[in-house]
Length: 341
Image 1 (cartoon, rainbow, N blue to C red):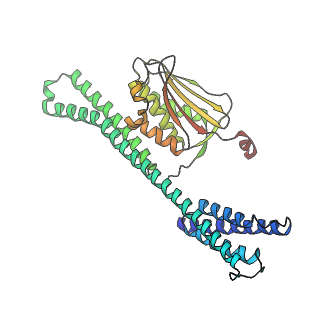
Image 2 (image 1 turned 30 degrees about the vertical axis):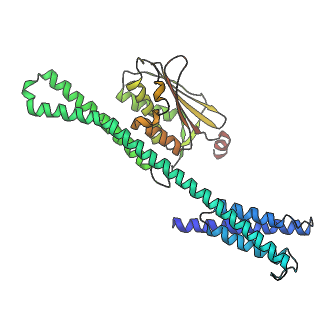
């Protein structure tokens, strides 16, 4: 069904552009008495068809139709297809050669873009595998070691030691659970045709949900929040964006050396909303700044989710100390919101 819709779209686009070009050429010929630009208009139409449609065939068909249309309606003898006149034949050969070259070039560019995107996906998969091995090895080793010790030598430990080991197993199990959540999120975004289902979400409700989840895991860590007073609606997959913010907050708690304060800020600039998570730790080592989103699964997931939303995410060190993570999303225009109400 989806393939049929794509074919229908491509055919519709091809017909619409050819008809628009034909109509414009009629205006040029009959109103402005201009004939020189007519082949160029059809060539522009073929170029647009090659760029917009999928595959090579639509551009080729458009180029053949364009040559026939120019010969039939815009060259003497009018309203007859006639290639016996040398000038008409030469013009047709030149035009079809130019349009076919245009089709070939646009198809080649599209193919190169597909190769580039596939390379990025492979790079993401490789980074994910490295991140998984990096983040899962330690808790699995700890759980295995503690559980083996309790099973084999449980009588040698005091109740306090047993409770400490069980608490460690619990914490590492919770960590593994969060890693699995991240893995499930990233597999949702790893297909060739990723579609994010966005729904308008209120900024304050989003951050309230984030803080509830974060406080369950880190009840002692306070987060200072600063958001606009007015209602801000953002089209997003709310669960995925929540996960991005929670991952960055958790990263600050776990890796920001010397950190005791976290600030979560969101503000709008033009048609964008900018999220900023800042801490007062020692910052990110300079040698890790460029690869910060490829080293751990949590931040790898963040980068993938934001990219799938069409946004940008960055990490840097603040001049006053500490790390600053920022990401941007398109914000829903308030005018359209008011009209819908």
